[in-house]
Image (cartoon, rainbow, N blue to C red):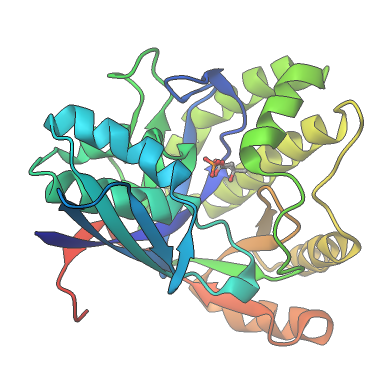
Amino acid sequence: MTIYARAHTNIALIKYWGKADKQLMLPATSSISLTLNDFYTDTAVTFDATLSEDQFILNDQPQSPIAVSRFLDHVRKLADIKARARVISLNHVPTAAGLASSASAFAALALAASRAAGLNLSPIDLSRLARRGSGSATRSIFGGAVIWHRGFDDASSFAEPLAIQPTLPLRMLVVTVSDQKKAVSSRTGMANTAATSPYYQAWVQANEALISPMITALAEDDFATIGALTELSSMRMHAAIMAEEPPFTYFLPETLRAWQLVQEQRRLGIPAFVTMDAGPNVKILTTAPYVDVLMTALRPAFGDRILSTQLGPDAQVITKEQ
Ligand code: PMV
């Protein structure tokens, strides 16, 4: 039987950067994210006893199935089956936006593959399974504002929606600075930071300390604090990265330009804050009434390379036609 699933990508407000256990994919810190509505992955999985190896097709192009196979091995073990699978994925993450799609990809794969293998996992167990594919996928099982508890073993490291969700009309603007494949993957990047940045331990401690204030700020709809903590977590992560040996940064000149434009708007009283991941693109956190004014301020520099989105839903099983 073929199962189709859809999962949405997410952007961390309090970042995950560094592993406590590479084998189990346990993170060094907890993290908090917003699931986004307009960027998602649809994945179809069919286990087929006649296949001699797993097959993976992404956006109509056959891919090396190595990472998918490694992930499916976890599913096969859980379901106690041997069959290989056909995996067909479509990314509705505009390639030009250069957004990471591993979060939505592994969350959709976790849901579709587990159901296709006959498992009916709880959302928390799905989140633990998605974690094996990519850390950020742990959070994409859930919609809205999500926390990934770092935990201390396989059972305790999972994501769940925050108990008190913000009611603010949160918006994320995605500014595409570059649509090139990232220079250093997040997996390699975080390993480099942990191994060579003298600020790595400080980053871990400082970032974990932002979790509890962020939970409170989101519960209280305190946008000024949500935004300030978001920018702080991201820039502290990038500072730790820059101090690696040899030094490295994901920033490009236009990244700083976008950050400066947002800071200018903030001085003018517009509530907007910046966050960046393992790439040069800039995501701007704001609320609905300020989207237009921010678009107007950014358009001279970035034209139509700005997309706006709101909070998205849980990962779901879908019918083929959706
Ligand atoms: O789990 P990965 O490999 O997609 O790494 C995610 C790393 C960041 O996007 C930079 C931060 C985060 O928490 O999503």
